[in-house]
Length: 444
Image (cartoon, rainbow, N blue to C red; front, side, top):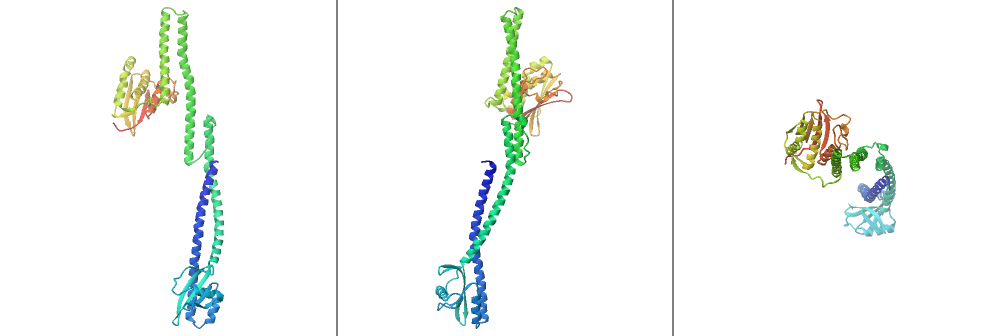
């Protein structure tokens, strides 16, 4: 069953249950209200008759006419003799009623007489030292008839109300579910990788937030799939080049094309290309593990000062060969929750990139800014070409003097596994700035 019909069915069932319970209690309470109202009315009429008797004790004929013209069952009786004195009831009925009442009985709302239920009001009065009893009654059946009429009308109102509520529910639910149905179709396109055909749903509220998340996910998936295709294309090219070189020179040596010193240089080149091939394969494997394996990354609290000093120490000889000075500045002594060896490799990759492009120096700086802790590596070289900035951390993307094109991609993967982000920009005065941003945490 579709969600639209499920929601409407659930709402209708809940509405019917609530209405039914409400109607039951109203119907039951209505009879009690009618009985109480009838008792009050009988009491009022009884007091009017008693006032008439007190004002005109001799007006027996007028009293009989008043009693006979009244719609209620009226009985005036002598409780001592249990005999009726005036009534609008048949004589046999009046005698039967008179025999059932006693002066000392407490007034009761309902009495069953001659097999029928009556709402009864009983008033005692004294005349010339004699006690008399005035009884007024009306059949409960009349009240039940009124109750039934009200119940029918109430049911009509309830049915109309339920129908209107269900209609509004359907319209509101349809307005809610329609964006979900559209969103479902767009998600199906994502499943089928039809990213170019995805259209916005234009929903609002929480559905709009879900839509935005789905659209962002679609963009990420599209970019990921494109990057994977690009990765495999570049990987095949990067692996193919050293393999072809190795194969070509190996066949040349085997066939005697290269002899003597030429053969030695060929073998040296084969070894060099084999090392480069091994490095590429190892970096590809590391990237794959960083993306998929949890056990490969083991974070511990590591002092920032030690990370930067170890990076400077390992890159010292490369910097000396290039005539580049390495400067370390730690403005805030902190510990980062990172895998020390992996983070050291990420910093070495970035610093090595800076050394290759710097003019005279590479600066490593650690400082805190707002709620973030930042490691900054900057050089004074020419900077990163503008067309290369958006994709510098993609795999096999390399600039001038780049090696495998995987170093910065590995650095980004390591930083992200450390719950950080990495950014690169160019300085106005020249040179590139790499910023590794981590959530600030108290020193351990």
